[in-house]
Image (cartoon, rainbow, N blue to C red; front, side):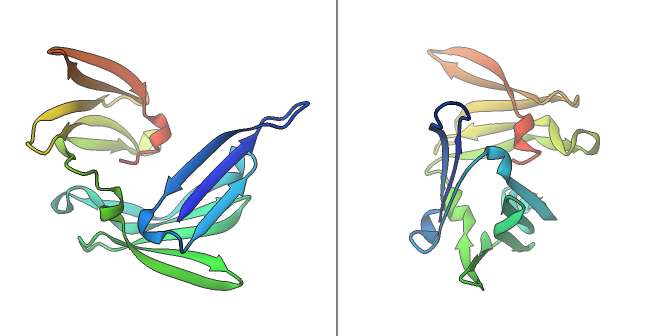
Length: 185
């Protein structure tokens, strides 16, 4: 599946300068969804809350998301019934018929030789639109050595996390905006 979202600048000339491509390797070339227009025309709705389980390495094991273009559903992803199997069903409308395909989403997004570990439980706040407001994750290489740590803070709804890494034996840290994550991790 290839999702392409583009938008144009409005003015004397319309220039296509913003494109986002999302590739779901196991679906190609079966499904291609392309869209153009204003980014505001695209939205997603969480129909059933996404659930992650500790015993499944904090992967999504259930929940449904629908993706829309100008209020018309383009496709949906159903992550299943809570089983730690990594399978999701992607459904879309094609020629008036609902088509679907089962996809191993864990395999799609698995980074070769890299993993993350939740060092301190991630906490999402109801009052912050389910933004992650505290907790620490650590990215590790194949040998289990940490190379990046992300600290989501002290519980305040500030949308800021701190990313730390080591370069030339010096620890460097930088704050960055995570409010656009919409509580997803």
